[in-house]
Image 1 (spheres, rainbow, N blue to C red):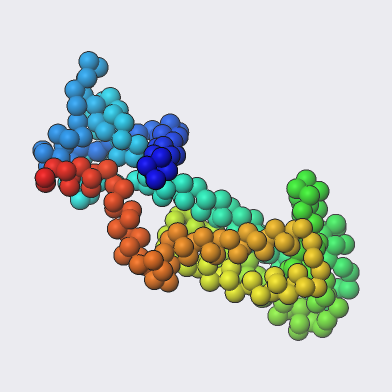
Image 2: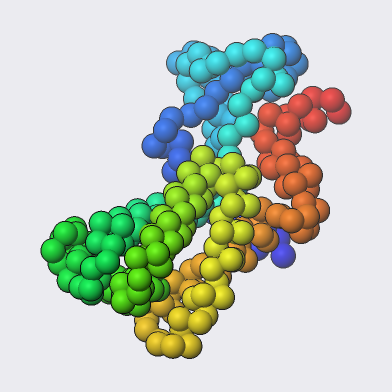
Length: 263
């Protein structure tokens, strides 16, 4: 158990040091003298302050100062690793949203056309074709594209409704991407609900035609929903938002030092 905890702390510190190496240390001088004394030290090169993220001392004046309650609360350890995963999910949602909006444009631009979606892509959206070739992902076999191919044989009204629906779905994906990128809790809820709603459609698509692309996309979405609910304690799971905030505060270096100063 001790070895496992030591490995966890080592991994967490590696994330913190890597982030500080790219962005720089985050130092802060609290107005409370007792607390400031626990974060400051003197070296041969001058004063040094502890980084609130990685805990190392950084030589030089603090980046900011003020009341301890106003100090920044940087992501540390597990939260910092989770932020990296969330940003990857945000990028995936962004790409999907842009593709859906492009698909909605195709339907709207060619309402009443009888050409297949593949021919439309070849003619008006060469970027999508190039992306398919470079990534090895067959966008023509994706669920939205197959729906478009079916609907292009339908009437004008059906195409208009389909274009509106695909556009709304694409905008929802962009909203998910934005909320996840800025790491807001509402973004996590939107991502979970928005993704879960379409899981039955993905299952239906798998029953019609199985492909590696569909299986991977389904597993990514399923894992994303499960991971967000569990790790972010959404919908009251594992104590809900209060427990999530308490867990985050427990990793705050400033809070740890403030508690130690009271002893």
